[in-house]
Image 1: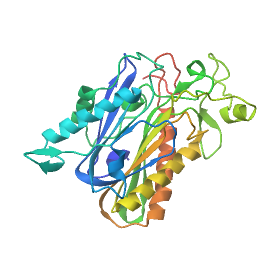
Image 2: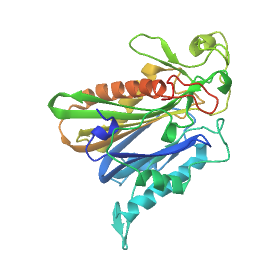
Image 3: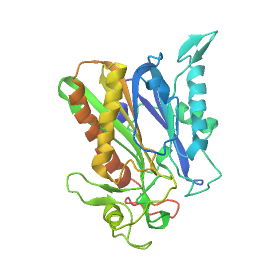
Image 4: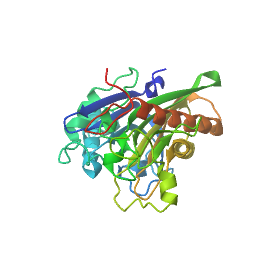
Length: 318
């Protein structure tokens, strides 16, 4: 399995700035896809998500942009639009094309160079680099500067990153996810309940403190909105916009199964859904697969993350 690019019609491209420790991820669906979104975090940074509402006149989107850089990173979506317009992708009007590219950002300014952000040029480069190859995972693209387990600050956190996973249903129906994991909470394996990556007992330790247990004892998150998990789920099953939005809601359950705590006032968690193709499948079955795909993608994201910017990762560099 290749991850999100298992879905026909999806291409994924990255730009990673390892010096500034930031980057962006372009997910292209040039022939158009029915989209949906679910925003459960209270500190989200998004662009053009209204186009995914069932009440919005737009019936298709042509890409999704995920970026670091906090609000500055939203600029990268303009680069994806510029790339797609140059390929005559989007709604034709007045001799040009208008591609619809919703976007979302995560906060990575605390690692690397806080004055360097994904911009339009980086977004365009990420789109130009998009391929159907197996999805790159770990500290790449929007996950370059991602971190997890930040209840006690970045000094005791661990690296997050990008992960991708596909679930296969009967009849050739596929549900795939790509997730950039930059959570305040710890990441647990749903199969065991054990913490895989998260807040550590001190800056030198590899022992975990258990953020939820500490919060029950009175530890306070604080008001700084410096965390976000961004998920994109895609399927080759045919959905309308109402169903696509429901699929995004199901996808968010994968975050709840793996991140503790999740959807906090300091997290900007967002899940997008894309429907491409003509396969027939029950939306509830797709939802079960979407939640699993997101959960497994989150596990892969932290397991594939290397140490970067002074923050330790689980994977050794090869």
